[in-house]
Image (cartoon, rainbow, N blue to C red; front, top):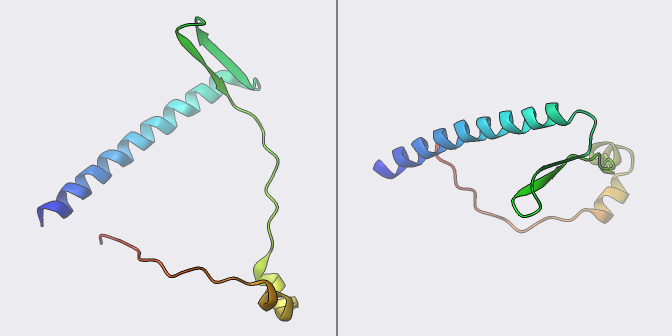
Length: 89
């Protein structure tokens, strides 16, 4: 099917572009080193890059909670609405 082939080609191009974007961002990070902000250009033509440390995320170890306290796990568990997943294999 032509549509599937077109999508596969676009996904391959996207993968290549994502790799180039990641490489460019990594070069900028290497250039910035330990600095959190980089500014380029002039006030009217230029921009700012920030690379700051964020606080770590707090999460619940649900497997452990379910094993140690199944009653609490069941009381606070939520099941989301079913969704349709589209995949091309």
